[in-house]
Length: 288
Ligand code: PMP
Image 1 (cartoon, rainbow, N blue to C red):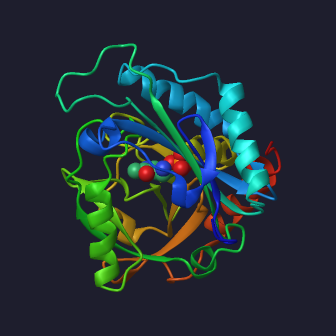
Image 2 (cartoon, rainbow, N blue to C red):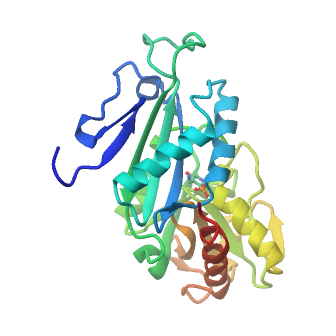
């Protein structure tokens, strides 16, 4: 183990990252038969951990996967990894796979133990460079599978979309299905109309039910913003006053342009800034 190695959690054990190994028979590896959560860490504490646990339980249920351990035990592992790795700001990644079994499209027997893996990644969040600068996005067809509400590790298309964006000098992609924006490669997508309404696609199997989305919409409503949960097109986004995304590690981040065309004046807008402030005040303020 070198001094810079993290301590990770793999299937019941804590070990240095170079020793953290999973089986070639792990169904996460063979079939993307695994779910995950990413929880943000600020000042060594977890943001909206309970929200992530609710979604985790839902993902497990939708895929008929066994619950590996109690939420309290998962919390204890999160806390130990944050402490052992001295994480001030960043994230904890948690993955739960259906476990190890001979390669077979049928699920293995119900008593196959799930495999839980967790590791930390330290990085600036509150003062992240992208949040300070704002994002350039491109639009791409949404070619993901039909159950995007389940947080599976099946992330190849979003990864391809992000790379395609990077190749043309953009930061991310907004995905479009039947003419309407679903979401970003790893975040929920919003526009602010010229009359100040916050618009984001409604919940369905087409998008991930973002934990940050739920919190931001609640706080926005409390702050007196008018919300519209409905689909919107790229053309409408280009006419909007502002565009933005939310996710656990980007919080609220402004989108400055889509497909090379500026949104509004092409600067971080007041609604995005205000929503970010409110989120930091309330959600980050309530971290555990
Ligand atoms: N949509 C997708 C496709 C995502 O991958 C993510 C990030 N996990 C989100 C939305 C945002 O969800 P959350 O706010 O829970 O991070």
